[in-house]
Amino acid sequence: MADTIASAASVPGSGHDHGAGAPSRRDFIYIATGAVAAAGAVAVAWPLIDQLNPAADTLALATLEYDLSKVALGQEVTIAWRKQPVFIRHRTPKETAEAVADDHAPMKDPATDASRTKPGHEEWLICLASCTHLGCIPTFAQGEYGGWLCPCHGSVYDTAGRIRKGPAPKNLYLMPYAFLSDTKIKIG
Amino acid sequence: MSGPSTYEPKTGIERWLDTRLPIIRFGADLMSFPTPRNLNYWYTFGGILAVCLGIQILSGIILAMHYDPSGAGAFLSVEQSIMRDVNFGWLIRGIHANGASMFFVAVYLHMARGLYYGSYKAPREILWLLGCVIYVLMMATAFMGYVLPWGQMSFWGAKVITSLLGALPVVGQPLTTLLWGGFSVDSPTLNRFFSLHYLLPFIIAAVVVLHVWALHVPGNNNPTGVNVQSKADTLPFSPYYTVKDAFAIMVFFLLFAVFVFFLPQALGDVQNYTQANPLVTPNPIVPEWYLLPFYAILRAIPDKLMGVLGLAGALAMLFALPWLDRSPIRSMRYRPTYRIFFAVWVVSVLALGWCGSQEPQGQVIPGVTTFNLIDFDLNSVTWLSRISALYYFAYFLAITPFIHRWEKTRPVPDSLYTPVLKHPVPAAAALSAAE
Image (cartoon, rainbow over all chains, first blue to last red; front, side, top):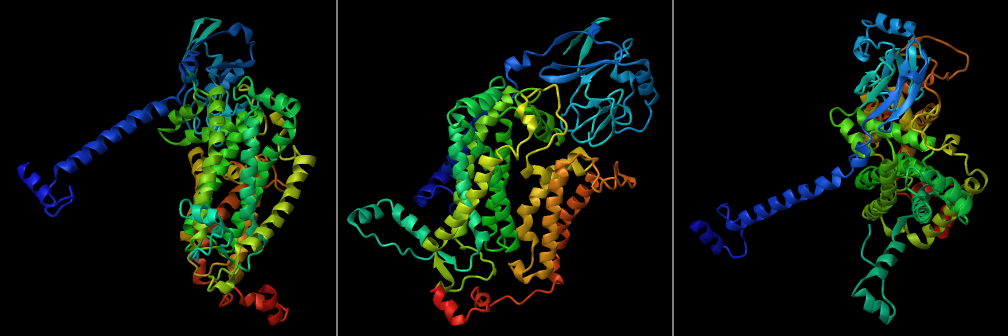
């Protein structure tokens, strides 16, 4: 340190970057100040960005119970869970059979029908109703696979909500849910 | 070209002010700025656009005084309060909503002018880039503004456009949630869009200041693309171009007034008279007209991520243009071959715009069915979009960078004066008239 002080003193007014290239105490202060400022900027930026994420009251709407006896065979309802549309589809045996028959057909996002329903409740398809392309709600009984057609950009889903054609990259998303009894589910 | 200031303070107060804050000098130098004497009416859109920004900010500040940015109250505050109850609310909203469309009409003509006369070329690259930044900010502002009435098209437009981010790998989904402030577009989304919709116009105004600054360093391009060589090639901006701009602004106001007073809803969508409903998607979803070409490019590509990249790439082409065009000649007046390619490009953009407004499986020629190729019939809106999008990109990536190697150009005049003197009017008369 002693020689650093000496060299700094020999070049008045230039604390850093002087002839020998040896770091001075002033260089250290510059770097330390810069480092603290950068850390401070990050520390301040985090709350400013994180405030954009869902607020506690939005997160609090996380679970929902639904009485399935309201949905007749072959009927479909769209309900809101966490402000997202959810399909509850009471599939006819024909629809279920078609979905199972296509289990090994070539698909963009391969999945078996069994993996998309709960065992013993295969007649119920319960999934998010947002097209995995850009979020529109697909319309049932349109498109060539007996399932849904998205009106926005023409994605076609089959009766298991699997993407079969069009720009959507994924099958209709499943969300966590459980059967509380044969006619009651809890979503979330 | 800006040259030394010619302002001379005349009164004592002006002299006193000039040594403290030379703001009068600043204004006087702007007004006396040497401007090429051959600028045509295509060059009046800059002034028109400045007026558009002013109108949008003024009418927008007023609307914000009556608007309720909550999911529960937004629709009623617009459709009931502003449109029916607030004194002249219908007029101010009519000006603001149609003003956005007028703004885009003017900006597209302004950009076409820059493309045609090569105004993006050296030494005006920064000027062009700042213009592109303004254009992107305008689209963001207009998009968020369209969400605010909280009708069905507002809501679903917002959902589709924000879902574009979800196409990005890894960060896509968290980023979308961050943007929404929830698990879907909802009241928090509306609230933050209102905040940003109020902020962005002032950012635009700041970039406009930089844009005008970048204009005043090299000076205006002109229809010949030939550099200004002496003071004789220029006129002071005022009164020559202030008057020309003012006349163009008046004509533009006529068009504006036709929409505000006679066709106030012509550019809107009836779906937006239904309040936002997150459980019903209206069919079809169409963005505002000024975004249609990009929407068509998005739909033309049968893959989510590639579609989003195609949309972004279409904009990136504009940013890259100063470095893609290698021809030393600025104006397309002297590039007859390139001019044809440009005209086809304009047609391709218009075709994309039309395609964006149609359903993807719709037929271009009614009643004709051909064969299916990549999910769609060849005679479908999707295939017209694909071909048009392909040409859009080919124009920038395959034609523009290479055409200068073989195109036959017309002789470029020695000065921006020469083409004027070739007109049938006797040269001497033209000269004395111009003095």
